[in-house]
Length: 405
Image (cartoon, rainbow, N blue to C red; front, side, top):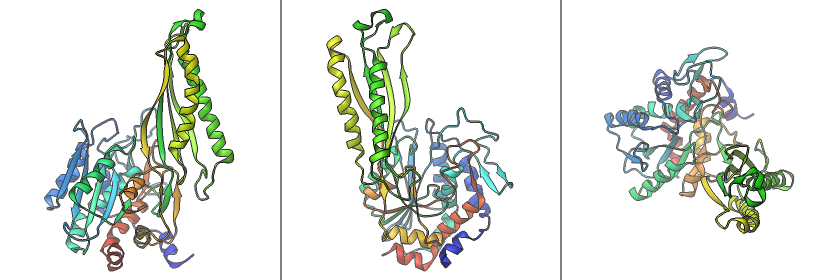
């Protein structure tokens, strides 16, 4: 183990009081994806405005959700984006032993901050916001940008608008650091996440008259079987990539909705499914195999009812991400995290979107995905301390040299 890795493995101090307080403050604001994130966004915006930081809010079509983009050091060259999403997943049906929004700190078995979003990813955002005054006072030779988005958990919708706003404003940051939970180890890549909804329209009839009906559930089952077969093919014969916990691309059916009564041939059925594709694997080509198969089912359906059929709707597209070993973002992240260790993660992030916008991008943040989306979600305080040191590392001359390359 080299010296950098030894430093990364050594115990860290607790986070500062402001960093922990900001993380707790954000966890206490309910930003489940089905709700507005404006209370959280305005909390951060008010703090930044009081410090004289220029910022821009961009809203969704309902104006109930917003992205926040702020620049510390407006007009300075290059620039580092610190990126995080503000929404969280729900906790319905989970067996929590603590109040999900209490942001409680418990000291055993180790000091931890509990609450929905503590790991994913309000701990990171809290550590970033807490450093604003310090970053402003340092008068760095490069700009630092905060990019806090909405609706990452349901498809990365906010980040797309945020990136478009950057282009419109003529801003060209060089590096993006996405603070998703990686245990403060820089992640070089992740799979894509592409979700689809299959709508099957049949023809209802009394269940004693099945020859005169088009059974939507049965035709959906055939589509489901094709998706399952494709998943098997990917597992058995698909490309492999060492370093992922599941080293092949996957397909999964996650929701099926159809039928109204035991004695009615169902008229409609909906199937929700996803592909998680390795970098280099075309998710659209996987989907084509499903839609092409569905097209072979339609002639028999339409022979009974011409209005019946199968259509597909893409509901989410989070592109895969893969960084190169010589990425400027990787060199900076290794310096900030004091480690030469890297990892790959199985979950999706907004990194692929920023990378496709031309930014050198790396994923690195506090906590573990094993705690995210779970009952009693938590982030260890030691991880928040490392994250705080990570952000403060931007003050070092070596960081400036990397950010301005």
